[in-house]
Length: 339
Image 1 (spheres, rainbow, N blue to C red):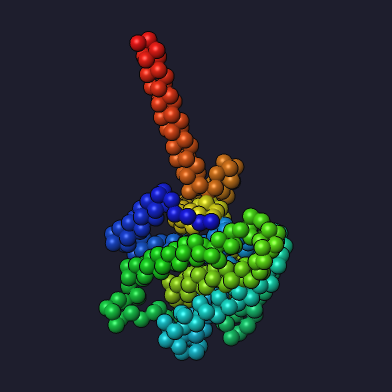
Image 2 (cartoon, rainbow, N blue to C red):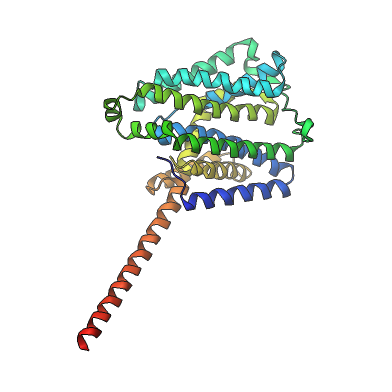
């Protein structure tokens, strides 16, 4: 079951403070990086909800993100809906599709679940790529951003848009943690640890998996709708399985089943990508080496490694305190005996 430790609270606070400071002081490129990190962080939170707490390793979350992006683009550009209504519609449609995928794939486990989600993702990619209504391989341009002029906010300004992305990231984090702490999240964790026992207790396993997958798909759609507004353009590449693969890499890099860990992973991944790609086109090689090192360390990602180190330090400190207390008690006993 998910729980907030002191370390997670402190980490969340430090990340939030650093992000706000960055937005206040950064120039255009720095603001673009903040928006990119926030969008990726929303996607990997969605993936961590099902993979880290339900054992459902999904390779269609990139497609769900792309569905959210295309849903928003189609509803605004083609249907002429107002951006706020289109945003809500894209999230609802993608959530329903994700629930259906979870209902089908939730009856399988392990590699079969992974391959089933991959198949759904590639089907979605093929449909978008082949259909002229979606712009085909040329994609769709002219995607508008939400108009917040009524409250004096212009999202066409990079700084305002970066703040908007951070605000939605905070809302998604709050929503995800509360879902995982509620009955649905606790039941899903129980299914991951012992599915047969949960079935024996009368739990409708496929329904629980489908419900969580649907909520996760809605969060992925939020990331997609934001991505569409970020570049004001959508293309079939958003639905490719490689997007899901990168999201899974980020989750593992940051710390599976921690929620805050994937956010750290998103920051590390985007910063590494931009810093290393400035010097070489083979930046994936360096990210791969780092990922292998993280996996071989047997720590649960970057955040898991920090948690592990601090836990060991606390145990050593507690052991030293117990030893010191024992020596003090022994000395007092000897003093009384000598007296």
